[in-house]
Amino acid sequence: MAKASALSRRTAAGKLRQSSWTQDPEGVKRDILDAARQEFVENGLSGARVDEIAARTATSKRMIYYYFGDKEGLYRAVLEAMYDRIRSFERDLDLASLPPREAMVRLVEFTFDYHVDNPDFVRMVMVENVHHARNLKASKTIAGLNRSVVEVTRETYRRGVEAGLFKTGYEPLDIHLTISALSIYNVSHRATVGQVFGYDMCAPEIIARRRAMTIEAVLGMLRLDG
Amino acid sequence: MAKASALSRRTAAGKLRQSSWTQDPEGVKRDILDAARQEFVENGLSGARVDEIAARTATSKRMIYYYFGDKEGLYRAVLEAMYDRIRSFERDLDLASLPPREAMVRLVEFTFDYHVDNPDFVRMVMVENVHHARNLKASKTIAGLNRSVVEVTRETYRRGVEAGLFKTGYEPLDIHLTISALSIYNVSHRATVGQVFGYDMCAPEIIARRRAMTIEAVLGMLRLDG
DNA sequence: GACCGATTTAACTGCTTGGTACATTTATCA
DNA sequence: TGATAAATGTACCAAGCAGTTAAATCGGTC
Image (cartoon, rainbow over all chains, first blue to last red; front, top):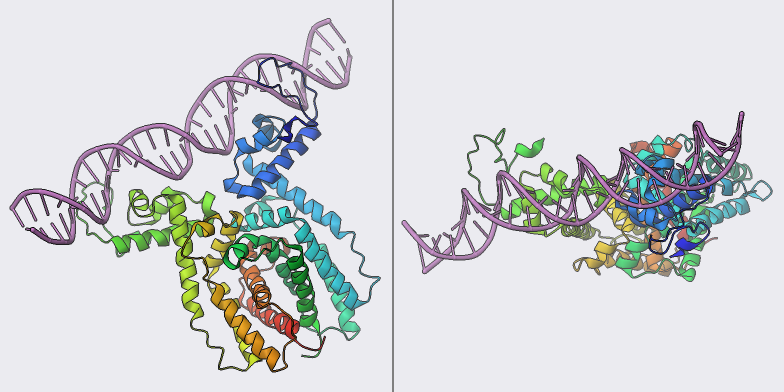
């Protein structure tokens, strides 16, 4: 496939090999991580095959073990890279400048869109849950990371309550979980929903509809008159 | 463990075996399905080991292949049994006798509680999604099954709209998916939420809180004044 | 220009694991 | 009671697969 791209150094049939290559640790690592992400996302942790990951790279299996130790180490590296990415995105949110209600809507939209746009992340989280978050536990980097979203939620909710717009008494984390649940489901359960109900959750108009409903649900939950 | 129960016929150390056993096809099948469910729920499809399943039964590995063909056949059988169970539960719902709003609340409560009470089902669905619902596709039994919940949702929603209680314009299936999303998440994402936020989604008081919020969110979404 | 650690290749290994061959026992029924 | 089919136990196998060995090559340094 796209193996003969940037890192191309393989010969056609193994013969005639020019036996010349350039050192590129970072490039090789990125190449491996990329191939691994695809494979883990596609087949899960147990379902993924190291040989298959190696085949997807421009390098060899040996390098996987050289840089990542073992299969789980590689998996953990992929997981960490994904969480890093979501953290960097969260910084872009600037809700303080918006009035509470609009800020909350934007927070929901952001969360919803992030999951739609990053199905790989959703699937990795799913896989991680199947494995009881064992590798999340083992990772030092990730601990105390996602807290920031909760802080943003807390602040937005607080302002809304203060302005007399939102019902009081909720835990900010619970609000975040509600938003998460409604956002993740549409991606994580595409396959079974598609199969059982014949409903294509990839279709743009359906995604748009579920997005609107998610906003309504969250605002409805927070609304005062009940 | 509980291996030496109803089907007990194993000798202590293999020696001294009395070489006497009774035929019990249905019992053996149930025994295998039970052991398989535990293993698949615990480790997923690829992560599950046939030898481990056999070890959990009172019978031998040979019987698994005798009755279920191969690993995937066994997995499919477990999946089908789970969907059978949820279908039988759905019959217990009698919402027609309740006013629309109360009926909707009860529907949400039922769905929420079912998932909390059947984490195995939730995990199997998760595993199935990791595998792109490939086995759901392969199963004849399951197709056109879960439709009944949607019909119940449709009818309840219709009555609510007619009574001037609910906002118009929603798809019944979308309402069901919203309820499902909020119900499933608390079970399916226990591990990662527990790890990332230190939040114990098994704790009764937290479950109760999320249950209440789920009801609020769904009713809030359906409410007229917006 | 030779030395050295970092990087990379190619071939290999041994255990795991899904699946099977074959013998044996149990129930059925003529 | 003895023939036959269904059910079960035991031992085994071959492929799959994570992980390794050993040697070669590269990039810099003195």
